[in-house]
Length: 337
Image (tube, rainbow, N blue to C red):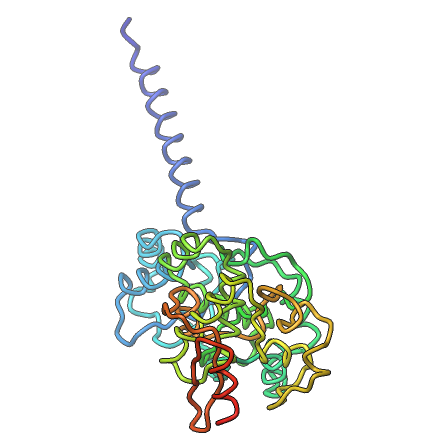
């Protein structure tokens, strides 16, 4: 049946309206926030003389816009091409593209950045003390967020909320943050660094070892505290694996020092008798959680221990460790050092 010209025109107009409305809805969605519920700041650096195309690509890579193409179209519509300024910006996933363009055009950069360094082997309480000492955090707020905040990371999925939940997972490194960064933004930055370090091959290796990530990081934290030289970490790790196989206690001084809250150079008999699940002189196996933040060499040592027949080690006068296969050899090495 042949349609009349008027009916055909009505259908065409209706289709055009539907297409326009659909396109408008899609465009608005692409221009809208990536995640309206995420208020965490993301540091984004825009280089000098960057084109709108380059800027859009950078923003997309940092997940603060939905579409680099839509961003470029919006910039042309707003006539802001060539007007967006270089610098470091604190942007968020809950910002829409229009808001981000305004920030870049106005040059609302983060002018005052603060650096802080967390050394390898720092405990959570030491991290908190350092950040509080620099005036970067409210201690109580930081602890509350660390223990009970919501964090979407694969390595944390099996770790319940509670006291010292993030012990071992705030990666030791040098960080640069905005002077008005929140406690959660600082924590997220450190967890993101851990996420960068803990690559897919590490997750596969954890499965091969039939262990959990928390156990690997706990072992890595003990290795971090026991060994000062990177070259010795795989050997130290191998000793602990050998002791597990032989159903021997770890007898790590570092775990007792963690319980005591001080790093005593020599432990007394009373110290090593303290009743705590972290006391590896008293209890078999690993402590329930890490005792410090391990660096990458210690994490790799926990994942890839060096095979040997060693069951003991003691630090020598030059700072290196002497490794022994028997208790008799170990006692001799202790007496010599």
